[in-house]
Image (cartoon, rainbow, N blue to C red; front, top):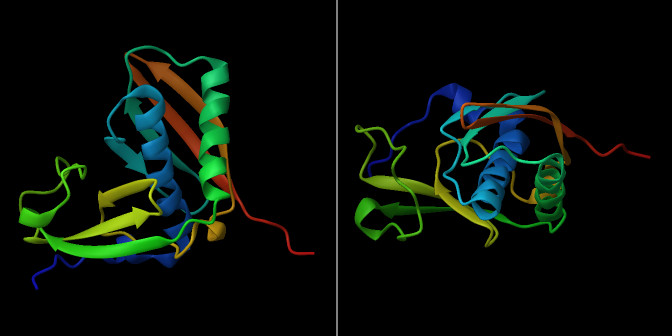
Length: 158
């Protein structure tokens, strides 16, 4: 089975919670705004950002709803599962438009419960209970692009 070997930065387990949260955020944006997954994402351990192309500027209430919905999915303690399949057998719901032209014929599909599935080579948690609490720390709107800046707050041990 031929599979692309990801660069070390994509296998950094310290960003696995944030990266898994990005999957949930992407699917939340698709469901709320009927948009595509983020085309420009910068995922780091402490804070991250994603850009979305939208038809109109979201309201303050909608921004708050994004945060609420992402946290609702996280709180469901969904399992994160990895599946390998050939391009010919990829489910039709999986968007392959971001794949590089030199991607292998066998793809790694990441499933976050039944909420989100996409081709991905990054590190992920095993369950959404490992993510923490999603917080939008700021956002901006310019020429049809919504940029969300966010962080994860970890649960405090008693």
